[in-house]
Image 1 (cartoon, rainbow, N blue to C red):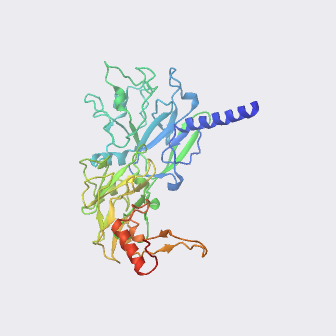
Image 2 (tube, helix red, strand yellow):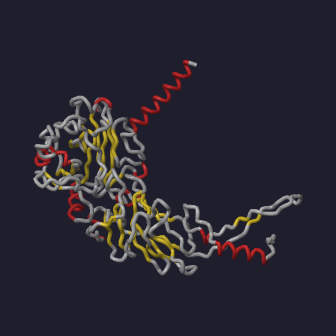
Image 3 (cartoon, rainbow, N blue to C red):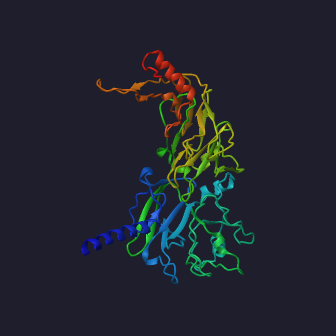
Length: 441
């Protein structure tokens, strides 16, 4: 019994340890490095990223994870041989963010909701962050910090919208935040307001190698390239009854700008424009719309824009995620952070696009993304009655009746509400007339 108890205890302890350690790393990626996580490492997209996507790098190494002692060693991480400055979070893991300089500069200048912070030179970034290593940012083209300006005179934190859920830094003491020397006190400007920062580099199409340099270096190779080969769109069924919800899924890694939070995009199919995070938590913001040429500049090929031809078949509606939306806009939310999978449905199954209740049979609406179209066909569905088959010898006073009717299947993923009393009475009277059932007084 003692051996069995110890064995069980060891198994439980091992499982708990794995859960605690894995809590440092986001899920959903096939990781092959023991201590290095790179957010764009995804077999579904063949490790491809593009445009102004922000890449999150995490080092989770027990040798340098202490948060209560003095400095335990800063991980050396490189992006194509260039130093990536990391900071220690409160959970002991180390975090850093990087992107392409040209793409970030273009995106931030468009004022379309893609706010990367303020661009600083390497020397300005050292001053803004106050980190110990005065040469730490020398390999960067520019560092985008989360403040209103590089000298922190107009101190405003969280001006970035593309890293909305960065981890809290390790505050093991008040003068060495993040284990890299960031100063924080009531008398001195709060340099930690520069966090999170994005190191940007100049790199062109091709492989980008990210390495954690330790005794046994761990590396991941990404591909910075056009991602249109990995874009797809699907709808929830082949034909629709009147009044049905239309659920659409878009799989596009380029829409996954923020690796730490769920992204959302708004498509205006009247003006043929796009905006980022216009509707965030049911709050509309005033963002400049992105035109087709803007999207090309950001690295999109045929993606980045969603079109709807309503044809007296489709109509936009508000749902739990987006209320009071314009009738020419449709919003897609990322289903989970850093996934690249987006849909137009809230948590109850209500979408922001539906079939009109008076749409005519045989008519179609059309939706288009990445230059690929899908037809939304309206079809008449016929209900049917299925009676159980009792044994001849059984005395039956009541019988279960199933009434499948696809015209009532408005929400494809959810159970429908009960049919109305009027519909039920009409159905029973019809069955009585056909002598399928008999009323018993």
